[in-house]
Length: 202
Image (cartoon, rainbow, N blue to C red; front, side, top):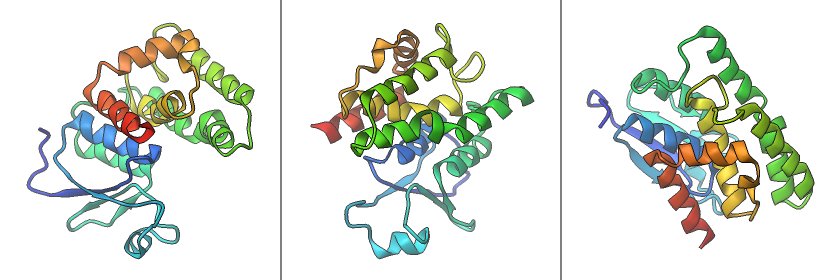
């Protein structure tokens, strides 16, 4: 397990939330022992709103003696720097910038089409076009940034997996996405997330 230097980390989590999945996957990749507090998003308790006002969004990472860390991107970057092995950011400055760019474009490239489809305000065609764009970015047998697995892949994969399992979208119709998912599913934290999604869909 990863070295926590005696400091207990607590993740305020919700299994159905793909933003929380980002944090869970990074914690799994780092092998970091932590405690989990499950938040019911259907009846959001007042204490989570107090922890992360004004909406009580998750994930939130708590560590004794430090400020609370809300928002998945903040949590992911903190964990990658706090526990540097294995590194989930590229070595080069240029590729690290591209990971940040992938986060900046997330709503445009995937999040927006996903939630519009889920909420009945979008279309399967719009979402398929979003998948085609990601497929092009991956390239044959590649990752979202550079030649290796990074926070960018972790940032996007929870929505791709949920689209497949919970929305019934054939995401693997896109060949590069299919190869990418097979590669990612060799990793234990991704397999664990697939099991979480399967339990939600059951």
